[in-house]
Image 1: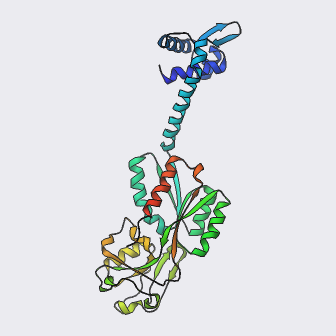
Image 2: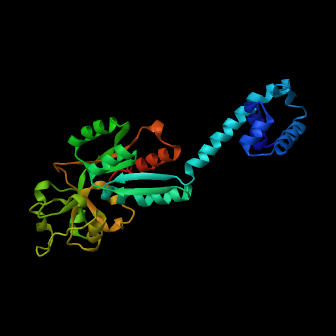
Image 3: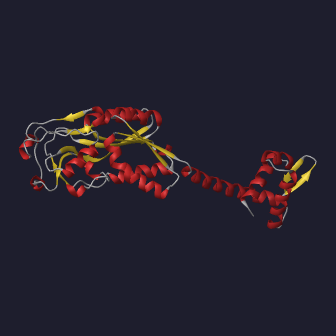
Length: 305
């Protein structure tokens, strides 16, 4: 017995006529009748009886009707699982720094497990990314969000049936070359920072400058301004005279040689940054999208050393 025979059986029941069922299935009456004859031969009993008013189920046909319907419901569920990954596109919006942090590992994971799934990435300023999550039902990743903005953003997203969660605390740290003597320091204070650039939001040209950090570095150096967080941290890894302030999770960027970087927590930094994950409510997500959310959570679950 085949799923196709069950499909033919249910269509005839629905139409009450072999002729009508054949038309809807784009089959000849002979082909459809042959399929039913084969099914009856395998079952060992007839399932339909003809009369002047049409075609109806035999008692045995009545008995197997619910079973066949349940089997076809299960098959349809399997098809939906298959369709969920076939040519599936998952859209993610986020700030440049957060996209850099997570995309490498996410792409590797999903290409191995779901080769037909495409991750469509939209890099944007934070507020633009929030709007994309609201309007386009995307998944959003926002880093270094000031605590005062968290609840406002959460309320905004809730209006559009979106959820926002914080992926753990993420304080700011100074990134320096691990070969520099300062790398042995456990932490520093804000008062120790000097003309020091932190390119937190490159697209917004959002930079922080301080006045005393260069007492720790050669005085003839000048601050570096990078188009991407990743680029600036690569410079830090190559040059002992360069340093940068970023949220601590920046160290997880898979494209960085992290053994060349050391982090010094800024114990009294006035603006701790929080990582936020925004997405449509879970009941509206497909199983693959739910797994995406889980993978992003895992990436940010590891504590900063």
